[in-house]
Image 1 (tube, rainbow, N blue to C red):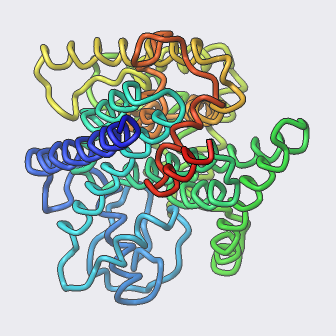
Image 2 (image 1 turned 180 degrees about the vertical axis):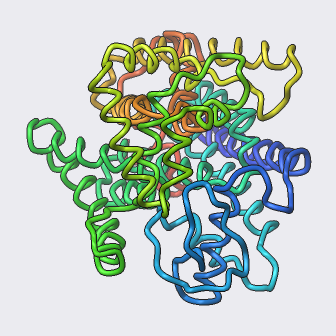
Length: 435
């Protein structure tokens, strides 16, 4: 009876998290969704690529573009292949594009479902590791996370990327290296920022004996997933481009530009930089601009490395805490948002420390977000870039040195009882009879 009650409680917790996550994301779409793809060049860019994949079978903008130039739907051509962006988010949109108009509702629906699935993955990882109380709290935190819910209304790759990365970690913690590698590869084909992480995981397999087969599986399978797109880029672009050709140089240059707090949107400060403005005004193509920005960034870092380091340190609060500006400009909300962020990340760090004795089982949940944060530390510190770290942080955030029933954190072998409890009733009866 107790086993059945425990199983019913876990299923109920799962359903509660799904319902709340879906309601919150529906509310976000109603409150902040727009149907004209305004806001950023990124949003319209994804749909233009998707339209041309669907209608012209080409991953192309349908016209030559300069840096910062906004692509347009129904572009006249030529439909020359591009490697500007990681492909998967646009390919998902293309798969949903069955009519004449952009599939806005369909994309919102998929992103809402993915957001709910991320909350469930957080719940399941915390359930197996720490018990029902921690799992329920972590899952609800993920379901209610304000900025994560807000991005459901945006046509950006963050929601899909977070789902892939969280799925990879879910399989990784369960020692399923092939599946973890598949999802890590998919995450990299959604946002190329995880490409260096694959290299680091491969190095772990080469340099350390700890979990060597698992690390090799994760890294090599991820590379296999990426390889077809890399080969495609080599054929169409005549260059070695593992995932995307645009973004690396620009983000490095943005990392050398001082963005004072309270100065408004970060991009406004970027446009006022003389070096950036000159490149944008003179470079004939996006690729030329990208190369020039990368060279200028390296020159600035070499000339004043300490100044660059100071700028990166100054950006730390912006990356981790954000401002809440995209959700609301009300001063009270922004203050509450920042204070909540301080508490959230502070508790997450404390939770990692308190769970340190379980590092052999839980290290991916801390390692991969740390590497992802480091990858972003050299460039633009937009707060949306930290969203993929939130699921893992939500798990550790709940830990205050005790589990839900006030006891010390259980060792891994005790947590496995929860897997046994999820077996069907016949198996459980046979197990009790043999005992």
